[in-house]
Amino acid sequence: MVLDNLSVHKGKKVQAWLLKNPRFIFHHPPVHCSWMNQVEQWFSILQRKRLTIADFADKQALSQRC
Image (tube, rainbow, N blue to C red; front, side):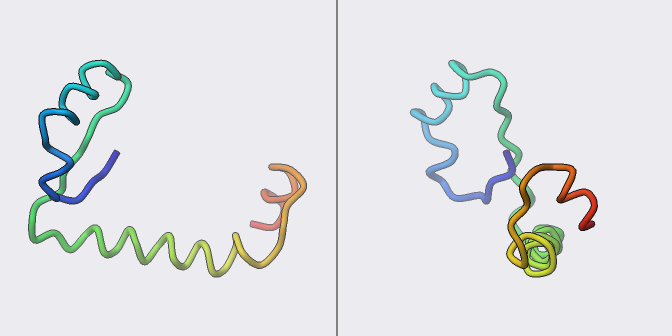
């Protein structure tokens, strides 16, 4: 999971949960990170252009649309 640097993501309870759930790994980007804005913009474009325009019956219908 990619998370911001909010202190609640690094607390003792969260760290204990991570030890119990080893399949999850937290990634914290640098504090002044511009690449996260790029990722958010990409998801915004994806949502506007592909995901909210139509409903898809299955994966094949979605693949044909893209």
